[in-house]
Amino acid sequence: MTDEGLPEKPTGTDPLVPRPAATVMLVRDAAESIEVFMMRRHAAMDFVAGVMVFPGGGVDDRDRNADIAWFGPEPGWWAERLGVDTGLAEALVCAAARETFEESGVLFAGPYSGAGDPGIVSDASAYGEARAALANHSLSFADFLRDEKLVLRADLLRPWDNWITPKEERTRRYDTFFFVGALPEGQRADGENTEADRAFWSTPQAGLDDFEQGNSFLLPPTWTQLNSLAGRSVADVLASERKIVPIEPNLSLGEGSWQIEFFDSGRYNAARNHRAPLGRGPRSGESER
Image 1 (cartoon, helix red, strand yellow):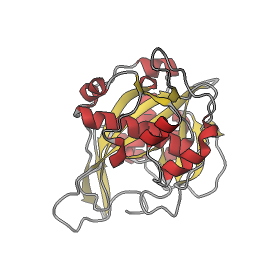
Image 2 (cartoon, one colour; image 1 turned 90 degrees about the vertical axis):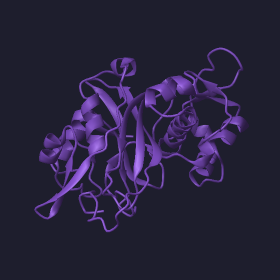
Image 3 (cartoon, rainbow, N blue to C red; image 1 turned 180 degrees about the vertical axis):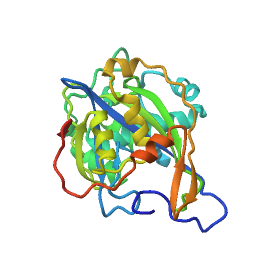
């Protein structure tokens, strides 16, 4: 990767096969605008270091055929909206909930009762040991839910977008499905994980402004999602019916650097600047954790 988070010049001929992944935009209403939970990837990370991201990650093999208690739209509903088969749809929703818990401490699950609305966990910090075990892969999400008699609250998530890493990327590629979910009442997003050195709540516009002013770096998918959330309320976002169409940007080499091309790349490339210096404090529109 280059210092701007874009690929080095490719050396192979066959593109990498993208790995399915899930990313979740945690949102909450604030005094003046919706806020979204963001993290900055640790500078020591070997992939997109220093970049601002939402909680998320690749689908784990154990997210597939997980055999867990499930409340909300069935996998077939998700498959139709995400444009994938039922098995992958189920795995993506499981990965979305698992990664959100691992990386932010927010848990989209409730006590399993076998019938009716299961409610929602009000204090996910009680599962701190399990969270650490999930992060180091010594525990599967399905086993965690079964052990704690919890049901996955798929109804608290909404499908939002789908981005595929450009073919020119020779390090790793992802077929990433974006979800959105409101911060459950009583829970707290903390960003306590090994992949981020900073976590905070920000208005979408503040995140966009920071990028344009050269104080942070956003990859095109994150930049696009912030644009899609700006000026909206949580209720509006959750009520949105999104048509999911895969977006796979193209990369072209010009004047010694990579230029990324997608439906809104003119505005993105104009705004693109330098990566954020490490350790700065929150700016206007941001609140730490």
